[in-house]
Length: 344
Image (cartoon, rainbow, N blue to C red; front, side, top):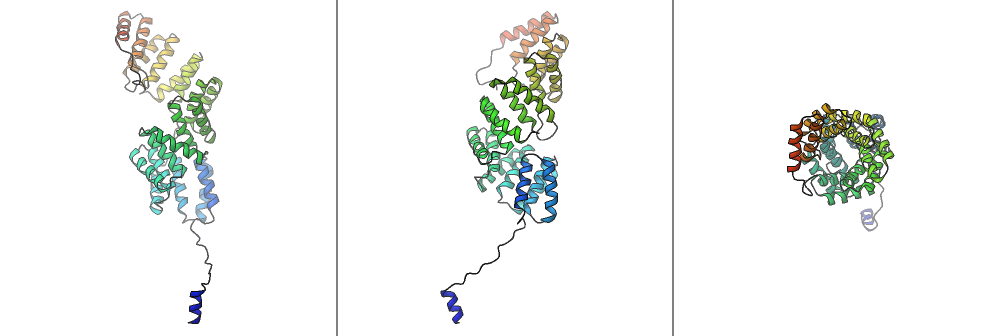
């Protein structure tokens, strides 16, 4: 009784051993794996994960990184299964929700990406991965200023996330702020040199800043890594072909525009640009075929009917088809120019 009373009056401090979680001791290795996946060094991440998973079989964060690895390798079903497994284990982890949201965004499931991005930011409003995803989704929903603010915050918290840098760059690209766009696309391409999209956008924005040689180099770097997968750029050859045409390298331009029409044959712009090039090269029959295909395309890619009519009138005139040339010349005169804001 005396001992019990004394313990109430003078509590005895007892130090209990710290609880060792299933990932305890693996934190540094997990951080390196996460970084490797962010920078798209897939082989490094895969080798490290294989070694770590045998030592920490119950660590849930390993499951998250296995999901990211499967996604990077294009194994969508396996990635989805692993993401579900991780989020079931820890539904409050903002990173898991954000990476799962990025997965759905890549799969074109925008509703789930939207929901997961909102949940991830709600769980942790200072998680740069969650902020970057939410910012990207908001921009896609037309809430550009809100999305940009989140992406700006994300890149400040983690300047080494190439996807966040890329998404922020696209905002400046749309705003025609080439200098700022170059800053973010250069960062994205440097962090992830396998991202052909980043090289393409970097090249597109270097040209208006007065650096055509830098633009040329960026295009070539992009072409060297433009493989099928998450970083593939279907418009890279088309953009480089247009660039080369402006530099009067017509033969090389045609080589890339030929690839461009194979890559995105449903887009009017690629047929239109190759038709213009063939016209310059006096390949009038090819120019006619391309211009007629451009006219038939529903996805305009920024090329107006008025431009098509003008091109067709020139092509038919060169071919000596006077009636068709006159027809399209009349259409050119009769078609009103676009109202400001009408053309994207």
